[in-house]
Image: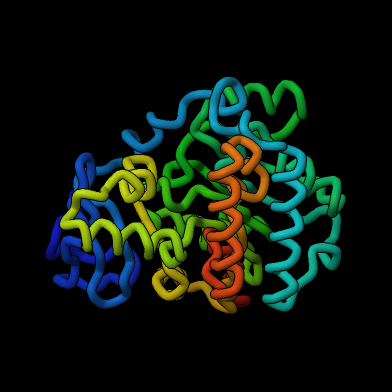
Length: 300
């Protein structure tokens, strides 16, 4: 799929409104002039994106830097909070309810969700065969290897689907969401977490880049990189979800795991700066992650 200025926007579907936003060393960044959806320009495919994530992130990868138990507990808490904001409760569903986790890794979130709810049917999808194999062997979970866009899943089946830090990596967020809406039960819920494009740090780094005539680009290149293809605001994410038929879309912000659970990996000076920026974002309501709940309409 080629995305270039003049192409149709992935979020709002508007043709001819895409414009070049940033030109960096390794990537170009485009933006829709209608809904302000930001994304990397260039070629992409399900296969090429899946190839980037074949390793086991718990063996020398990013996951080693965090307390996995704390992260998973926070994710279950986030899912419960978002359902309440949408008017639902995890505890209200019977044990035979089915849940699906996209980007499940080894299945730690599914295990915690099962413990919290008593749900008996827990399934997960991840592109890493190594992590899937560990989860199957150690936890006995129904984990499936592959890309969500191509997975064979039962229609109208899942009461809850979770997708933490996945949507921004996918070649076509729209195609993935269309698929997930079709496998939710009517009235079922989808919980999504993605990085937010609207944070104090992002605004400051873009300002420094433009004021310096592009010379101060290091911080921006850490934010806009090959692994993240899509960059969402509250408005663009709501637009995208509404366009695929979701209702009761509620969005809030929260601190990123990399600062909440991983600040100890930085020097004392950097930790002080991180905490100051996080405090500013908390005050402004522009924290680093967008947390979203939406529902497939009943009767569809």
